[in-house]
Image (cartoon, rainbow, N blue to C red; front, side, top):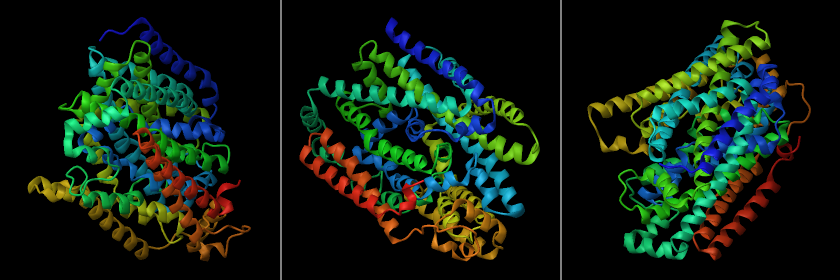
Length: 578
């Protein structure tokens, strides 16, 4: 592919910017692991929230959306839209709790919430299991996606391009730590959104406008046009069967590993200035992630159904549309958005993985009395090792889908105990250990049964999710009641620090030395439901408007506005004040 001089200048400028960020923040990040992993807890909400959005936009995301639209229409996006309930819950209930915990990693919560050897075993196990194994699986499919995209844009050796990008990401990550991650995330988000919107506008205009596009879709797909444009999955769909759709909206949002906002989202929550900024950051992420971000990609995916109706790999439609419609300059900007999206996801995974390996394994078990400078130096070495392991994982992967299935399959059903540990004093370390082991056991049992006797039943993700989640939930609840509770002194200290605000903490709250703690109640549940309605109403309202149904879109937006206002009024004041 021939790139013009201006395209190269744009690409080189971004690379130099990323390296410059690393150099600029290197001194600040090197002061302590608090600076290196949580930016000194000094991030304003708009940086932390934008970083959340940017890091969930990997290089494979627009390709995935275009592929989903090609296979199942707009409704196929319920594969990720279903998680909106999780993020509304994280905004209302967990954003302030994470910040109050005053921790560096989400795994550090285990030490302040649980007691005894089980807590230490769980912390060490999860540090290695999540920091290395699960983290490398994520990096593996992201790198595989980058190789896939590279093959469309350039004729260079794909691994050479990947190694150059990894070298740049490694340099600014190892120099500037989390400061470099979040600051490059903000620029990446601006570039990615601007590029996606510009591409969508050009593509729609070049194909005669949205009305003409709908007519062409009807000509090519005849009676399937309504299915392509529908926001609700078709009954009996093989891509998203009824069982899977029901499992998504009733089980997945609370069963997923990130049900309480843990992982890299939590890292940004407790990196903010205060609890209010943590709340606003997560709120901004939820709105931007679901209501604003998807529609430019969906529009390009719809037009790709007309321009490239019979692609063997529909995920390649998005980069092919970029090549076909963008002129020099804009092409370079779009390429930068892909490169930036890739590095944003990789640097986040590497920084987060390094944080739990160093803080929750090395510092907790190997060298407990090191200086801040020592831990920063170790973190920089581990950053390199994480990138190397992620690259090796990529070499072993044959498909992005396989990586997704392995990751989500092994962690299905974990979310229930993650939610319960905040709101119920009786949950202990054995609860989490049982949840992890039983989920993995159930997943691999189903997998090996299917390998020996292939069945159509196993191919329905919804059934696998329900079985694994159900088995895991029964196991961790049983373990909770069969094992001793957490030491009372530990529970009191945790309650005084975090103030969970749950009626299921009453036995502990009665002994804690704290002032008034606002209790969550029925109104807060209604507020959560109102928030979910608001997010989906805004999502569908914006979608209807861009698809040429302004009247219906305005009705959705009105419903969203009313639901949002009602939900805000119902909120406990403790949630939105410092």
